[in-house]
Image 1 (cartoon, rainbow, N blue to C red):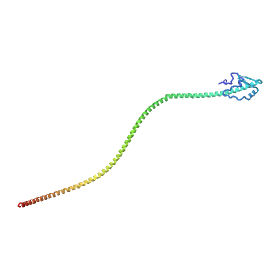
Image 2 (cartoon, rainbow, N blue to C red):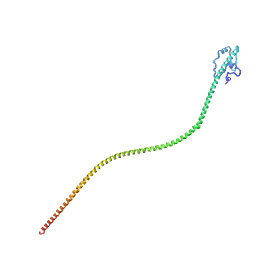
Image 3 (cartoon, one colour):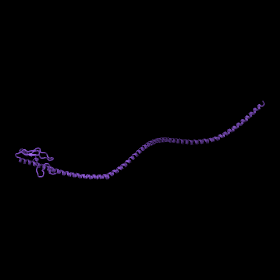
Image 4 (cartoon, helix red, strand yellow):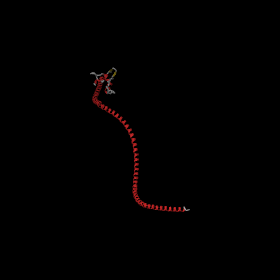
Length: 266
């Protein structure tokens, strides 16, 4: 940006007219002066200056001095504005240079991030997507396995429920059989006690039987002895009976014959 771009800058080597300097247009950002300086006020009091649209008219009297003073004042104002605009231009150039530096830094950062983004895109396309596809395939396989395992788990749960019922039934049967076994053991213990008692009683009976057998043998021996004696007594009794029978028969015969003889003579 050059000085010619400002509104109040001269064109080439020509200076602006008095009308242009008397009402200069302000640059962008310049404050508008509220009132003329004291020297300009005194010059204006010495000579009245009338400015019209499209031209200017100078009254009579001290016209050249007033115009000279007005020209010097306008030139100093224009120089001050040029100096201020140049200072603003320097500030703008410094700001532009700083902005260019920041833009260069930002551009370098953008390039770096673009390169990083390209690298990330390459990594995404060559590594991440490959891993993603592998992971997706593995996930699909795992999902199928999960469904299969879920079905197997359902079947196993049903089987577990059935086995639990069977286990409970078998546990009840086992408890019942254990109770029966305990009862059987108690009955067996009682029977064994009774067997022991009966065994002892049998031993006692065996001893008594042997004792009685011995006594029976003694009685049989005595009976044999008494039998022999009884046979002798019986034989003697039989002999006596035979003698008595014979004597009775003889006496009966004699009585009969006597009675016959008595009966015959009558």
